[in-house]
Image 1 (cartoon, helix red, strand yellow):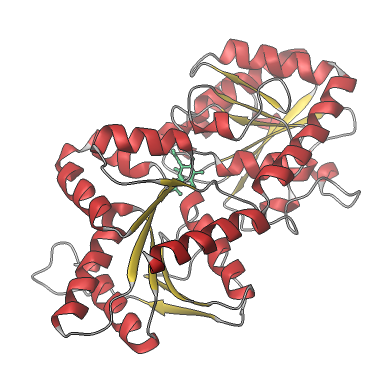
Image 2 (tube, protein in one colour):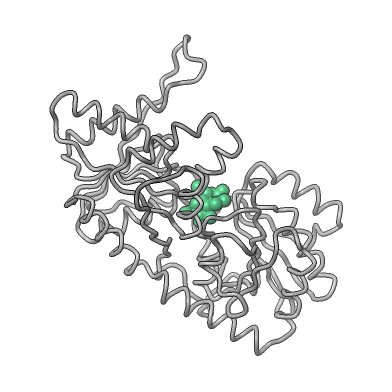
Length: 376
Ligand code: GMT
């Protein structure tokens, strides 16, 4: 198949999933074309069957906001025409599915072959509409204009059907991880750069948006470190980074917290950790939590979100109510104090992640879904 993929190229779960998917499809012999305004984060190597098409953002005195979506739609049509795309796979309805719809109209107006549009929902479309209802109609329209729809969890599929009154099937295809990159510690690890042998290492990875509740991460860590020797490693950057730094300073935790900023190879750090914290307000899936589990790191996260499809409560982590940092810290402390149980959780983390979310399985699900949509 010849597939065009558009995603947000910046660090974030949806871009990572799109990039890994494109790379693995290319490795299976499909021709993959990334169409975006920058090379996606994690698309760092040359690969056979894989091409990147940059989209220009035009600065023109009349434009207060450069019309990126129009140049993106035009580029989608151009790549479709030049490479005879079978599928345009959009990650996010807004604006990508809308642009794909426009590209399709452009091609149709010239009687040119039209690729099928598949949209994968990652969650933030709903958040966007939640914070700005003016996006509701265009999001609903773009969802319905797609030939195929997937969601990264059942939780998200149900929410989307509910919020947007969706009348078509949304196929649930869970996120996955690259099993060659994310695996438990094998002796060669940077652990001693972060913590001593006697300290526990706690990790958190996110884009530090308010939805991630980074201050809860610090609160949980403060409670853990009051009882046990521990260090906290923070990976990622975002609007709440400054708040987090201020809070760490205020609590006198500077010597116990390591900020690593954005990292493209988090698999070098994750396996060193004993526990991963994801106390988000909302999480349609929680890819960073899956990557931690794959590295054999149990997760403490929020109940009642898509994380429930990723973390097995009481087997490889604990899911607790949003904002309940006391219970989260208590769960963390009791697990860290129980050496045998911690080892069981670590083993279960890697095993369950590999069994349910290995890339081989999930990429095949995408391939089959592409075929279904093409033959519909
Ligand atoms: O969580 C973010 O802020 C990033 C966002 C994104 O678009 O990259 O992540 C969303 O998509 C990921 C990949 O499917 C999911 O693992 C995340 O759970 C989801 N984020 C939220 O639902 C808040």
